[in-house]
Length: 389
Image (tube, rainbow, N blue to C red; front, side):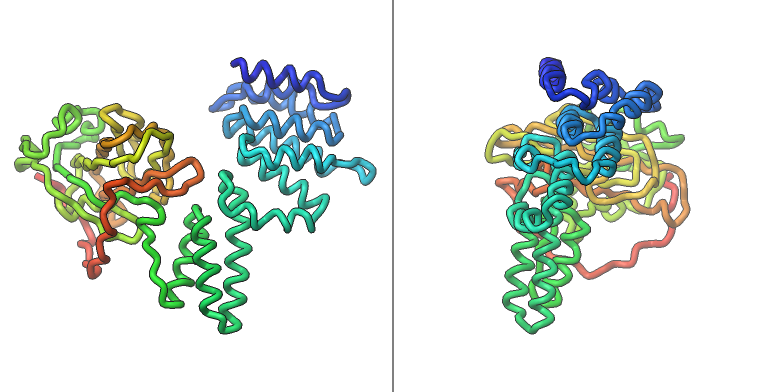
């Protein structure tokens, strides 16, 4: 709250005819499910009347304190003001540049500031791009990675393969988004260079799994089964139709998918658990990033951090981002994954992918991380699951 008050003290002291601090404050208060939208719309209309460059920095600074919904409102207003600036209106590149170079500002706001710099001085902006390769903003890294990819492709087309490999590797060192990592890895593979993608992303590949427990009528999501009360890898419990006991599951999937169907069977209306330990070299903030199309819950160091009771809504890398605080030494992760009653072929998957990274998406590797398992020959998965008895 103190930081918000300080922000509006700064805003109130700026030049006249700029965006109203109260209007920005109204937009920052907008909530989910339409809460505050009417007031935000009025505030937005008031803000865009302040058609001058000073308003842009106010809006960008406001984004530092905005959730995604409020940030969209503020960026939209900034786009309108930037688009309506007259030829005589001058953006201060010194102030804009200082904002852009300050890495404590919100990534989306810094990205917009960079776009304004590029519009005002394309040559200077282009000169800044190489220095963004390891920027804490993924939005800004993207440009530096793309530039290196283009240069590598040009070298490769001119038969300078060693130079292309070097540039692709440099690009991969800064790449955090799958849309760039995958084509870089493919390009390197064509040049006979294999990329350890699970290590690059930081996917956790080795787990202990147990199941199956009952999820008839989707009651298993809220049912507390023994692994939620204790982690005893030697224990056995009453499962659904059979005794449930822990067993190792090691994935060799390129993108770290942990397939519960393999050890537990092609089952439906069941619950499975996966457990692993992550050794951290020290205390630090981090994120658990999960991809999963089943209903799921995650416990970190014994504390439930989030869950989602939805089924088969699609799966992708970094689908869910959960902030955590790593402790020095051992940290524990428990995943609960539920299968429902649907038997269509597209509901077969009973799996997840999980990685540990920093806020940019750069992998944080455990100090006890082992070598990535070798890719096993592809096995044909049964086309339809069966209901467990």
